[in-house]
Length: 164
Image 1 (cartoon, one colour):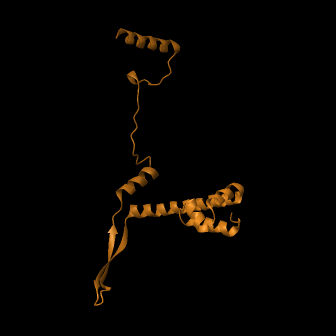
Image 2 (cartoon, one colour; image 1 turned 60 degrees about the vertical axis):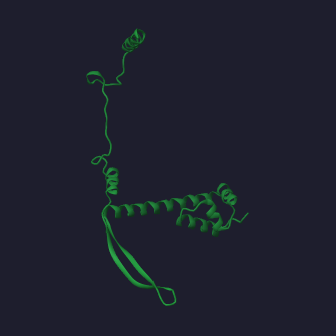
Image 3 (cartoon, one colour; image 1 turned 180 degrees about the vertical axis):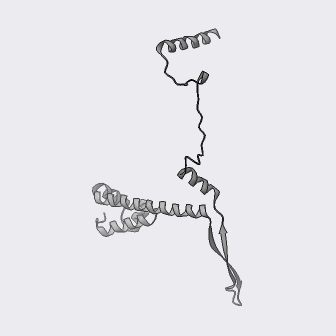
């Protein structure tokens, strides 16, 4: 079993903050066994806390990146697209013949806009229907009945069943 030290903990937490590695990948890169990772989580509360904190920081980064991407999709954006044409020279090695850069505009994404409006301005842009059920003559369908009324309804339903 590898010896627990701050350097390994920092290496593991830095990896967690950087990408969504599996435990096996983390252990391989840190040079420890998977069983050691889980043993440290159980026996070293500070290790478990450092792992949780690193995962929380990674999640915050992902959320911010998602918000930035959503903003670009809602507003539309410009991107440079490079096109390179190659030809072979006398020796058969590829050589750049022509290289062009085109500025390409991407229109706002309607689905992203709908998503934002239905989640951030839900009262104004509801994406659902409300159905209300009422009983006979507009009375409450689930109104509480007295015991006498309930017994009368049961008797009425039993009579209908028996007459068939």
